[in-house]
Amino acid sequence: MQLFPIETGNFKLDGGAMFGVVPKVLWNKSYPADENNLCNWSMRCLLVVDGKRKILIDNGIGEKQDEKWLKHYYLNGDDTLEKSLNKAGFSFAEITDVILTHMHFDHCGGSIKKKSEEDGFELAFPNATYWTSKQQYDWATKPNRREKASFLKENIFPIEESGRLNLIETEGEHIPNIDFKLYSGHTDGQVIPQIKINGKTVCFMADLMPSTAHIPMPWVMAYDTRPLLTLKDRERFYTEAVENNYILFFEHDIYNEACTLHETEKGVRVNKAGNLAEFIA
Image (cartoon, rainbow, N blue to C red):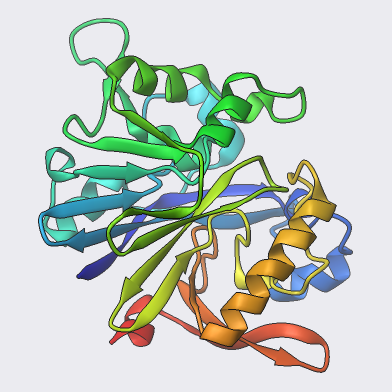
């Protein structure tokens, strides 16, 4: 098995929204904002190559939205999904599976592309099976008012219409060597894949924990629909992560790809942080 971090570019979000009730005087030390109170975040995905299967976990914001919409997110950086896949030695057509942790636009936008010669949309990964949880899919297709703007129809319905959408209803090893774990709070039924490699476990954290700066227990995003449930599910995750020395892989942390955790007098904190390759060598 091989793991390839796939950078798809960066975007900016309001720091207060990303850190919820935590005062800026605290979070700004860990994850600094610019003069407009915006923090820069990666949209880092993960490619798992295991035998004949090439499994992409999340796929960034995509390229089909218009400039008026994209300008709200201040896209930056030179990386794109296509460039990063090509750099790893793969093409869109070679991807066999796409795991969508959830269906917010910055996690699944690259799933779909515009048709080249006509109106409408098509799969960006034409030979892939797309995976997410039934709980999340139901949540995304009947969105609440708070999350509605994050669930774009053009990111969701073309996957179902393709016949390549596989909805899971329970936790388990739905793909060999990858456990699908379900967590709620940020959004319902978020899938957190746990990859078994070299006797270790790499957890793709998605928005259960966007960055190392979010590891202190109360540091929960204002984007989370039910923050108390986030805290409950994080506590469940922390117990397993510390006990089993899980490697946390971050989608949004622009400074760190991965880290491990340990228990301290102040609660669970970062033990070691760095590039994923350092942890799985």
